[in-house]
Image (tube, rainbow, N blue to C red; front, side):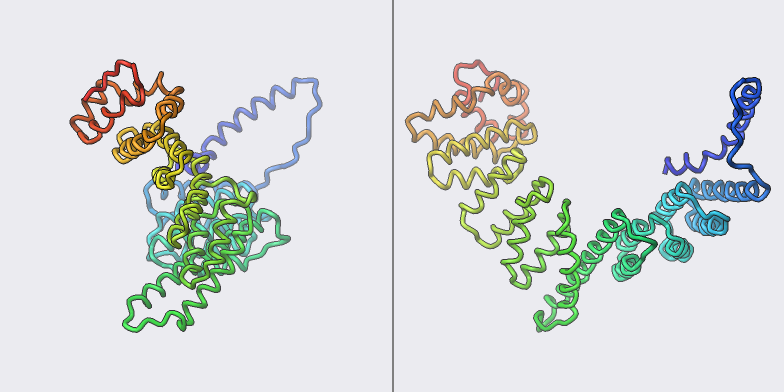
Length: 417
């Protein structure tokens, strides 16, 4: 909003700038430098046009400042029309300004009075407005927020058929995004159909033609966007949910594996979380689950799923896996967000108990704590921590106190039972 206000207010200084310009011109006449002929001479027509658009922008600004969204939309329609009627048409900066102001109005305009805004859309569409596609997407978001899913989908259907001149690479990308969000809206409508069927007395999901048609339409657009590099979390989740519903587990697993491991996608911890959650729903063996969590651990060692990874490693009973679990839990506790987590400390206690069945367990713990002995006391074991844990979480105090001399033997810690 502030940027728009500054943009609308820039003309207030034009007269002052003109005075400065005149002063500079007088100085140039005394110079020996050659005088460059002006490339543009203001005519009565251009002056009239500038005054009228400046007046219109001022009215729009006042309406926005007073949150008079209906009035701002009406002035906006006049402004867009005036630009179209100009001899050269709106320039890039003016079109950009229309986009920014229109988006602001869009987010605040009353639901019941969208006619003026729609008129602006139509003018932009037919005048080759470069940001028409993105404004259409903004418009569809606004409709969605107000529960108008079908209207939002219609808005995207109109936008995806829009063409202006030769399609540039940027315009192609924006069109792909329009297709993708249309697929997402098909998914939303598919969910509504599914909910209706699930609550019906005699559900018949396989023969519900509307639901199947929505699935096919959504699949086409969602699969298309997934072929492009990017972070597509909501699109992935929507597509996988539909595939699971129709028992196409092979395709669902392929999509999730590609999203997690294909190098065309940027590194994304969520991709590994989604794959893990899917495998868990399919009752995959622990070995497969640990393979996924191992990669997630490398990307985000503080992730909450590291608790589950440590439990799986501990459950395996393998000596090396127990030592690995120790390292993972200690690394989690390196982060302040887990400092007061009773579950994390209790899991650390369980891992150490399991390690104590090994003859060299003290060496394993000492090796893991070697780089931490200088700063862990201040992070976890001060007198302040002891006092706070006693008041807020006595169970945590008990677990931590039992581990102090195991983790940091020989140190005089202020954290006491």
